[in-house]
Length: 417
Image 1 (tube, rainbow, N blue to C red):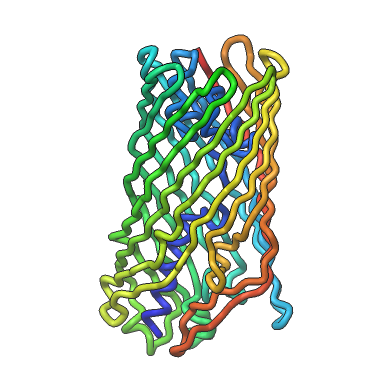
Image 2: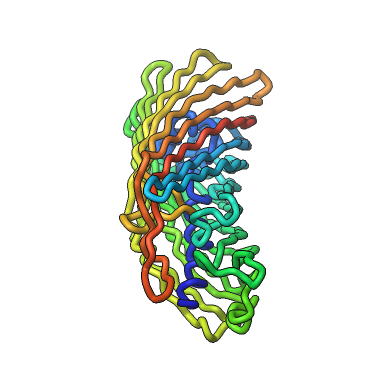
């Protein structure tokens, strides 16, 4: 039982790093977010191409393209279990950002650097709430560094890519069980902290210009293995009988972030640009989480099943160029959840979702542009449970109805010369 209690704590810690505290919100460029986060086959998004498809950056008409921006999101989740009369809700902000820069070294080669934070939100429930044995709060931060090179083979074909370096950290707290307290009645809890966790991956993209109107794109990001070798666990309010077992110490753990494949097309017609992206995330790589409690031999090593499934995202976007200064955009996407039945937990309260996006850009004559975006992401209501919490030698389910949504607004600045 003790082994299961603590290993589930670390399961929560690392699984949320793949979901940004429960919400996998795509915000890696305000221009493209306004178009439903499409962009794998678009060459007009400037330095934002470094994220969506590095191969597109070589078709820029500028020597330098620079783009940076930030979004402010608010994630709302409401939980209810009518059988037991449980109700709770959480509202959490986040500020994902990006900074891209590309340099056209020759007519056929572009180099660039992309820095972005795809995971950077948090979830904070009321302390000692009904699901506190799974999570009280979690705060996640991760930054990606991606240098790229793009080569133009001809006016019809290009390719590009580069390595990805990830640096991140997380702080997580949960109660150790549904009922354990110290002698004063305070709930026993554990806080886990990991700092400067690093990993490497890579990305590669291809772009085909079929003609002056139709373009096809492909981008692949490899699986990234996150290894934690020096995480810390700290226990509070431990009763006397458990103090020889529940000791502060070091943990080791490993979790794969799945590979992703995005393919898409764009079509320009007069002042209009239409785009479609299809994304496939290979979540079946995440079958289980293995955790080694280095300083707690009584707990040892634990293997926790996750059994995620591959999931797809379908994105649509449209752009209308009114004149040289003003561009309008709108989009929509549908994102499938990889969580299977019985694995739905309050630290990752996400289900299938639909996003509605829009925005505009205004470009001044000096080459500086302002990019604005907004999005509303609605998760389908779900009555789900997490069935693999082990207590007293038995799996205990925790579930209810979850209603979730994310609202965001973003601003970016771009400069080309």
